[in-house]
Amino acid sequence: MELALTESSSMTTELCELTCAGSYYFSTQYGRECWCGPAGTDYEKHGESTECTYECPGNPDETCGGFYAASVYAYSTVEPTPTFSYVGCFQDDQDRIMELALTDSFSMTMEYVRVAE
Image: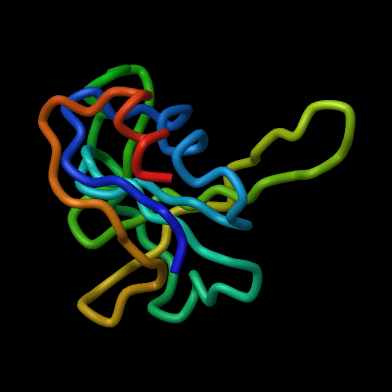
């Protein structure tokens, strides 16, 4: 499905946003994971959550989801500059709400992400 990365020791909301560019939604989980979803993604299928409490390791002022909890964002394609907005915190489980595509990397860089695209 869509590109994503996982296990980045420098995860931030912006890093996930850049990784999922071209998707309609993206989310962070477990503090270190990034997930991407197309239009029509049912991010509400497991309900809302209050468990989005994990700090983003690349920016401790940001929250990057939690244990089976996704901090979900939607892209806005309003020109001239596309942006994203926070949708909310939603539960996740083994029946995932979004897709994950890249393997683990503890040395994630933007160059690595570009190569994977």
